[in-house]
Image (cartoon, rainbow, N blue to C red; front, side, top):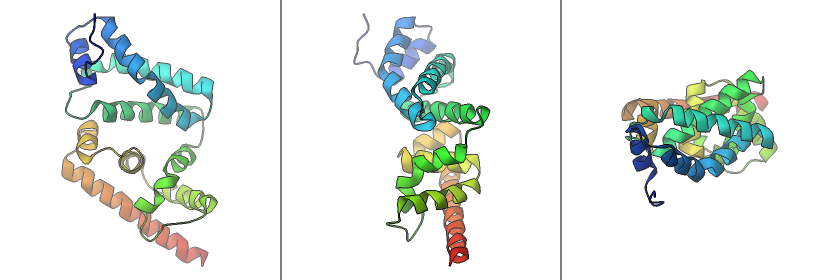
Length: 189
């Protein structure tokens, strides 16, 4: 009988050591609702989200040996969810930027200086334009930091970057967004 209080990290370690399927079943049961909710926030279709959730659980099973235990399990899991959903959106020709914009619209005040309150439709339009001009890596960093509230250390370990590289890239991505925002504002006045 498996102790239900066992941590995610311990479950993964047991799986990495050739543990049985019960460990993975417990891990999957624990996170299925979270994965499904995150997938639904990308695709807005229950059946599609369900399919993505199953795909992610399979990836999780296949990638279990890739987890090094340095970053938090939740950060590692989020990066698998994000990458799988973005790949799916690209393959289905959906607007990836639009989806990321909708996910980040509430955090715009944390990313862009001098923006506190702005009507949501204006925010979405502006953020859409801004996000089209930054790289997928910059989007992922901003999403992990501002939307998902992951710690720098976890982002660093999950993406395989140094702490200073993560901080520098986040700073540059924010500066780039701010510069783009200022130039957008000047054009619209």
